[in-house]
Amino acid sequence: MSTERLNPDDLEVAPGFTHERLQGWVPDLASEDELRGALEKAFDYRGDVKITRKDGSVVEGYLYDRKQAATLSGSLARVLPADGSPRVSIPYSDIAALVFSERDPAAGKSWEAWVRKYWEKKAAGEPAEIKPEAWT
Image: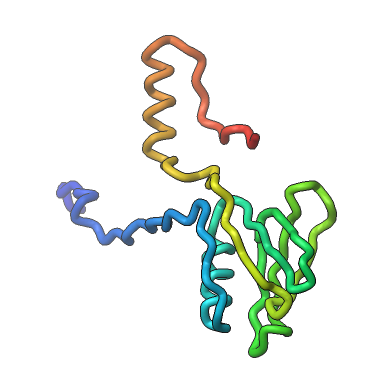
């Protein structure tokens, strides 16, 4: 058995993921590739999006799932509306415009910041526990 200690800095580590700053972005949806790319980013976005359909109706909420198919009419964006109404599936072919909300609830937050806040509270003698923040 080796007495050698492992140095975590020498271990193989996967690089972290950097989120794009998409708050308030209004993507150009002129081509099929632009539409598909924007909806992929919307799926990874942690805030709400506003989808305007070609008939003029608007759905605002969290894009929680999508189904990609060979055609735009077969591809679907699944949205949990912000107003609490039932979930909707919108064919990509019905989407005229997409707007990302001005607020990404997870922007600027990291595990390290969360733990640092915990230890600062503990050091100050305040009650501290690690739990998710309430959604507002």
